[in-house]
Image (cartoon, rainbow, N blue to C red; front, side):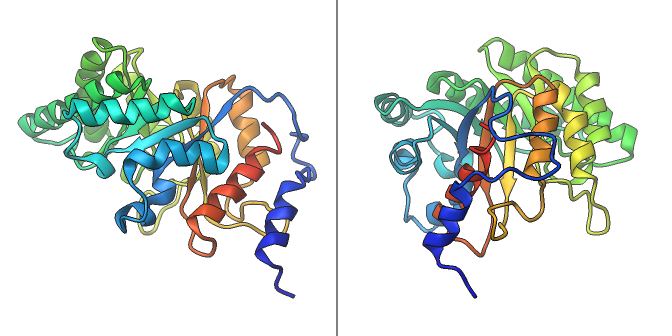
Length: 294
């Protein structure tokens, strides 16, 4: 029998332990929960939600005290001081921490062409400055490149190092998400961050983004374990849930044990990308699941 939405959410909220996980309910809780704006990308693209209201909604609707913005939803506002001031005021007024800005569409930081790579680096400067103004600790970028394994590592490391040096002058981290291509190979991305060798450059391990190509998917648990030593943020990706409130693609107990065992103490960001539940219910489901352990 199909359970109702109310019963589904009630089941999730019971906080049932995952048998055999090695991570009992409430164990070693050390981190705060944030909300990634991409969780509401449908509503934002459809103009059913406004970027300026995001921090307020995070607090009022979910009592979440940290937000992760996506540059696509205020792409022309990075240099608009009045707009950024309003974003900051609304977050501050509701006791919400601006955590980071996810940056896309600014060019490939590992472009084979050195000039295009430099242009991509400089395209991110405005987001570093916006992040500084908003009180964020990081911008999230992509390690996009082309070429052989070694060529992509060298090119991406070059772009990331240059951007990290600029970020350091503003006290802002440059963190890389596993986000397609070789960046979704944990071994490659870890090697690239090591080659950058800058304290302001780190990772944003995402529980679900390990699709390297149409024919290759990297082991998500291995990948997160490889990226956690450099993590300055963590993305709790979710897509769907079973009748006990467990995420169907990722064993959250197993994954959170990897995160905790790495000594991580920062924000873990909810990023719901599913289709069956609404965006609002998907966020609630992910929040309930995380609260078993947080």
